[in-house]
Structures are given as C-alpha cells and as structure tokens.
Image 1 (cartoon, rainbow, N blue to C red):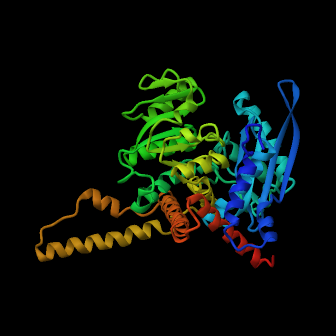
Image 2 (image 1 turned 180 degrees about the vertical axis):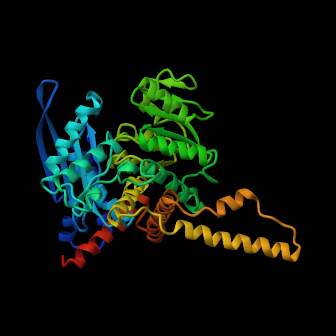
Image 3 (image 1 turned 45 degrees about the vertical axis):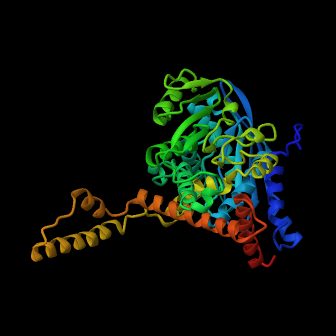
Amino acid sequence: MLATGEPSFRESVDLMFDRAVALMDLSPGLARKIKVCNSTYTVRFGVRLRGKIETFTGYRSVHSEHMEPVKGGIRYSLGVNQDEVEALAALMTYKCALVETPFGGSKGGLCIDPRAWDEHELEQITRRFAYELIKRDLIHPAQNVPAPDMGTGEREMAWIADQYARMNTTDINAKACVTGKPPHAGGIQGRVEATGRGVQYALREFFRHPEDVAKTGLAGGLDGKRVIVQGLGNVGYHAAKFLSQEDGARIIAVIERDGAVLNEAGLNIDDLRAHIAATGGVAGYPHAQHVTDGAAVLEQPCDILIPAALEGVIHLGNAARIQAPLILEAANGPITFGADEILREKGCVIIPDMYANAGGVTVSYFEWVKNLSHIRFGRMQRRAEEARSRLLVEELERLSSDQGLGWTMAEDFKDRFLTGSDELALVRSGLDDTMRTAYQSMREVWHGRNDVQDLRTAAYLVSIDRVSKTYRSKGL
C-alpha cells in the first residue's frame, strides 16, 4: 500500500481480480493459482559505454503459462520496477484470454531513459538485455514472445530478433521470437497502429449499442463527441487520429508531459504531433490554449476521456472531480482500484484496459502466425478474389447490355469491389472482428447478471473463466 492510501499497481490488479472471483464458483486453490505471478527474472548486466561500464537492471515476468508461448511487451522507462512488470504481466494473461489469443501473460522492462542514449548505444544495451533473456529461454518463439511497449518500437524489436537469430542459427522460426518488427524484417502491416486502431474499434462497438451508450447519458454515435486524450505517444496519437479523421470525434484537449493544449473547436492531431516532434512538447503550439498543469485537464468536461500513457493517472486524489461520463483505458492501469470504486459510484462507464488496448496483442498474434507459416496474409487468395469479383461485374454488365437496361457501375465502386484483400485489409478485418467479439462476450455478462454492474468486472469474469477452464483441462 502506497503512502497516499492507494494500493500499488500490482495490488490494484489483484484487488480487481478478487472482486471478480468473489462472484465466481472457483475453488480457492485454483483462484490462487491463476492470481499469482509464476516467476520474475531480474537481470543486472554491464555494457561498456562512453569509456566506462554502465550497469542496467531489467525484468521479465511470467504470470501464467496456462497457454504457451507467453506474450507481453518490453518497456524502457526509469519507472520500471518489479511491481509494475508483474502487474502488467497479469493484465496480459487476462487480456489474451479475453480476446482469445492463445498466449499466457508475460511482461518485460528495462530501467532506462532511452532518450539519454544515442542509437548505437541503445542497440548495444538492447542486444545485451536480449542476450541475457534469450539464453534463459525468456525470449523464444514457442515459450516467450515479447513485443513493443512504452519506450520501445520496431527498431528495438528488430535488434532483439536479430540477436535471437545469431544465437539460434538453425531455428527456422527465429523471426517469431518477437512481434512488432518492421514489415521488411518479418513484421506485419498495421502493427504500429494496432493498439490505437483497437481503441477506435472498441469505441465503435460500444456506440453500436444504444442501451450501453444510454448508461453514460450520451446519445448517437461518435460523430461530434468531445474527447480528451492523455498521452500522444503511439497509442494516443493513432487513437486520436482515427477517431477525429474517420469518425468525426472532436479532440478538444491533449495532455502531455509539459502540460496540455485545449481547443474546443478540435485539434489537428497530425499538426500537433509534428509540433511535439519538432519542439519536444506541446508548449508553444500556436493553435490551442496551453495549460501548464496538464493533470488538471483530466477533470475538464468532455464526453470521452482516453488516458493513453501511464498507470495510476486517475486516483483517489482526483477521481471525484473527473467529469467524463465515459472513460476508455487506452493505457494499462490508468485508473487505480480506489478511483475505480469512486467512478463507478458516480455512474461513470469505464471501458477497461484489458479490452480497450488489446489491439496490439491481437495484431501481434497475427504477426506471430505469419512468421510461423512463412507466408504473408493475402498472398495466395488476393488475385483469386479479384478474378471472381471481375467475373461477377462483367456478367452484370453483359446482362445490362443484352437487356437494354442502360445502367453502369460507378468506376470507384468497381475499383473498390475488384480489389482483393491485401495483408493490411485482412489485419484490420481480423482486429475489428476480435474487438467486436470480445466486447459482446463482456456485454453478455454485464447485462446478463444482476451482480455485475460494470464492464471491468465482466471482463475479468470472462477472462478468469477461460483461464480456469484451460487449467482444469490440464488436470488442475
């Protein structure tokens, strides 16, 4: 328990787990087995940099091996610690079960500020960290498959994959040891945007159900909804971009490390992102009002609040002042257990992290399958789809001509209809289907049981039930 009276991140996850298990017919022994973290490996290694040896501390935690490989990202941050890594590993277990990807839960982290090192130095550090994990099978295509997380991306995943291949020269499936790689290095189209795209699909699915939307006091669809996004990293940027450009939502505020910018008319997300890239923050952005106290903007009136950066940003100290009727957790654990209780009592609807940000692991699953099958999606069927569609169009046009009907198809329709599904289209289709199906499984519990009042508890119930069934099938 922290000094503020808040539970730690891992304790918050455990308390939410306990709240759900209390509603289940699960033996105490099995509940305990699912809850505890199986193992955490701590590594301390040295790298010679700038004329001296620097020592770094990293972690790889395995929460549950009810299915293997276990899956979970590697984050680079000075805030990385064992408690955080174990909490994130637990969330990965429940997340994978909820969206039905065949993985157990794992997570990794390196206590480092990636901005403090040059690229070649960061490569040395990453390769040595990967070496320490690989030699203990904590990175392996069939046992433990990392992915990007906060502070890491395609570049780091490519280094790790290459390091694994160097150490396992005869493993034909070496590229499957990690996901989130660049497309030219065994990655998959749509992976970089996947978590943000999943946020968009999650909100679209929520707004397809008027009964659910009514619980927030809102009405209609996403068009015109006022959105505040906290964190314009990979997830927050893509979520804000897609929601504003494709669904008509209005991003009225963005919160970053140096404050927040507000514009009731809506922010141009690409323009703001370019400003952040050029200056390092949101301060000085000419098309919005700058507020130094970014955390206070979480409490501004809006329709949808999307915390997309760090855990614990909504806590006992500010939960009562949050005005958003709908919160979507694009980050992992942005709402503490105590804050969750306050928000639920206020009637706030929370779309939980284990569902809302599952787009990343879903598309990682597609990438892993692609690496194991050694063929890109769409390669065999795309032209066959186009040929069948062309036959249909030509026959309809022939019938129109023969019967003298005089109608023709619009060229843009023909172009779209005659285009077969490439890898990106198939990835988006699979992600959309996954997010819809997972939401419906939560919704069935949320609306079907009188003792379940919120989506988070429903998500835990679905996940824990699936994990428990897998353990039972193993004889536990």
